[in-house]
Figure: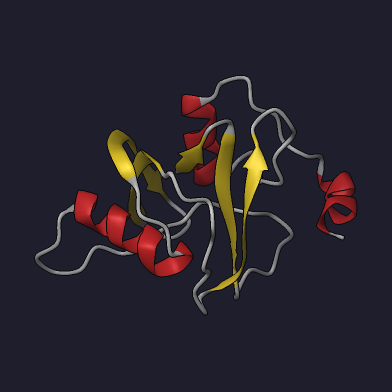
Length: 130
């Protein structure tokens, strides 16, 4: 989860078949630490250099049979250069409801750090994406 001031970076992958947004994620390559992966993935997918990387916790995804390792990082530069893997990437204000699936691991990560965050109701999501 990448933050800047009171905003969080959310992204939509090109293969998303749902209206929700998520966090930047990726796979660890052989010989790479989880920390280096987090830094690399944010740079590759959003063109952002991060600092203050902080391990949060792990999550098991039964749907995809994966172990997700959650980190929080900050960036000074908010100019996104999205990769071809992303349909879109944007900054969202944490004071407003986020367009995330409330049951997703990504939303659990955001809620872990920001317990008062709210999420957009699915029926209202189409209005926000216009």
